[in-house]
Image (tube, rainbow, N blue to C red; front, side, top):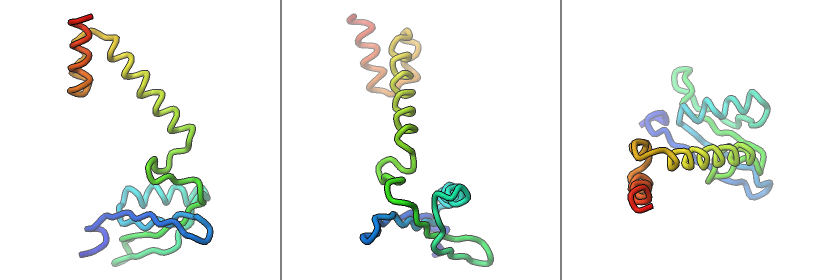
Length: 118
């Protein structure tokens, strides 16, 4: 089985300096991390190829720029995303019941309950 068939991504934090090492065989992650390399925000440590095609890469990024629970979003981006989601939910709940199809099942049920029962 080749690395491309596995498409795994593993993040390990180095003890000596706290920098995360990221091994990935996922093409989407490789493209995203290559963009960071081009911007100077990551470095490629190793590359695995098969017939001149990149199969997997290992990257090093500075400590503090990666949160395993949030990914690569900066704090400001995470706040903006959370704010947009909250605004969207408020707008959906203000609309008549016809918008319930846009909501998840539980949110839709609760919106309908509040619409009927005030």
